[in-house]
Image 1 (spheres, rainbow, N blue to C red):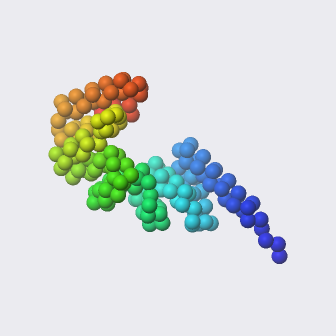
Image 2: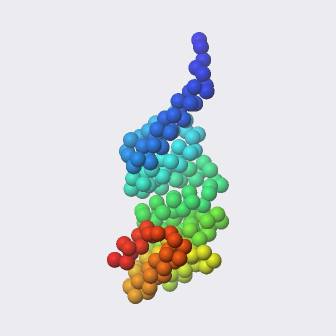
Length: 194
């Protein structure tokens, strides 16, 4: 009996993986999710595919499944980059699982401290602990190079707190900073302006 060429099989699997990634990039979430699950059924050790499944589930708004998929990735890879831990944290935040979101923010802080503060600010906002949320949002902005997107977290907190004047002033500062650094339009800035 002849053994199949292992290299050809691996190439076929990776070809399917790239096709699934293209589906996800095209926002064709359901076929991408199905394709990624088929790949994982064939080779459960494909960590990159498992991570892409979690990201695609999150993009598709399937937060419960995304949180479970991220938990699976975290269990398989204990030393993950902070951005993956944050993505998992945001899935839990959207589910209202604030303790888990906060834990993941704390874990991510080692690798991405400012972005972890943004998540913490949002967790505190969800808990209606606005003073702590505001402190985290302010600390999330790098004083040496403030980024407009990070500055908008403070806007979210101030709006939730009911400080609309402060929120508008913070929006103006973010818009001014965007103009200073030439970043063009800032995602959600005009939406938050209302």
